[in-house]
Length: 597
Image 1 (cartoon, rainbow, N blue to C red):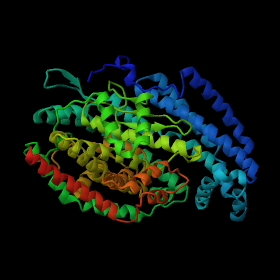
Image 2: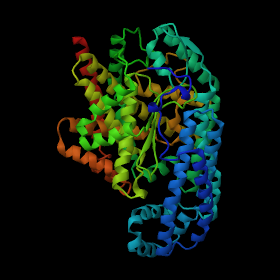
Image 3: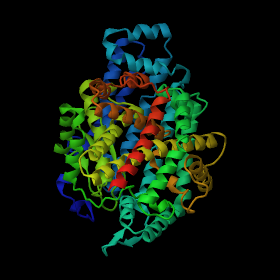
Image 4: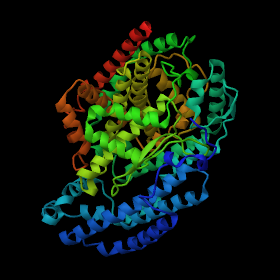
């Protein structure tokens, strides 16, 4: 794949098209001014929400205005992610943040006013015919009756929480734009600048001695600035803890469980199951050391695939591979996937100052959503495209089958859509024909499970610990996080002693920590995705129908109800044990096939 020094060098077909949001910055500014003025009109609804007609009028007005604010934010965010050093889009994103805060303050009367209504009067109001489509969302709001503040308190909280989203952005800017990690001479003699976006790709191409050098060079910079990252994380957790206390929750975790309507027992079952998988992980490390001829597994070996394939994939190769992998989901699903490529929904290429990682972002009033990634012409990049395409198609189905207010789904549901695609991609490679591709597919799905099931649970429990630490009056420091990470790694992995002084510093790279307890959603979702994809590939037509229905199920159904569409009970440990069994079986299958090559 071509290397690009800046965005200007990237061909148009490899860049996303943001025109469906705004055709120009000028049109963005026009909508921004319009939204500012509309926020000023919100006051006319204060004190009138106990009337069905006024309540309906406000909800209609609010759904339109909130969608506009979301579009303004997404446009500014994606333009900045194209170039994190662009001061114009830094300013626009800042303006979008301020606007969102203005909106939050202006609408802060809504929940206290709704929750001040007596239960009998509330039931009469929501039985009004014109409020029919809002009935579920209003009942969900009323569920928080014991966790509400006064109108004045809500205004103060809304004013103070505007900075919460900036912690992750500051961390991202440090990692991807500010830090200088140095350069490395590649095996072909070229000099490569080390960046967060290409770190794993570089590591895969280097001999072991140079991998260690790059690992230490990269992590030395992380270590140097880790105190800043710890400070950002501490302030984020303090904000989250303060909000939880203000809303009369005993902890951030209790608030999280209340929000997703799940019992803590679900997560206890998950954690205990993953911790029981140490022998399986040990088997993987031994296999990887044998296959890659390593004298002991070290952290600089982590980026290497279990099976090293030198095959390079163009962006067009990746598009077609993902399309082929998704065929078991039927023609309609593939048609929705094709629209992603056709409508230029993906920003593929890497260059300096582009945000690292991958995501899919969507607006509730637009069918099209956007994928950002750093394509490295390897199988990992193909897997990222499959993953984010799962989110993209899921949004399309939600858009087509739900009212605007129910098109947003919780992460714990959304990640099933993305991870099922990764499972299907691996199956496509395993069964395509050539043994080398089969080994690549097995290597890929093993990595997917290790990252999303094992590591996500391990780091999720770390989140529980550092949130408790702050709630008990502690401070998140670099040393605290490194000690916590070291103990956690030893608890989940077959490790007695860390192989490098930098092995416990990777927490400083984690953007997911800035969305509290996000990582557990991956672990639960990969368990479901393995089960669903396995059933579909075994020809279970009922599961295929249920899965497509699952993708169309809006947020007017809670998490447990949505999972029941798949026949999955999240309180049952079996789905997590199935994931461990899959990991073990994939490792054994790889070992057997590798011996035959």
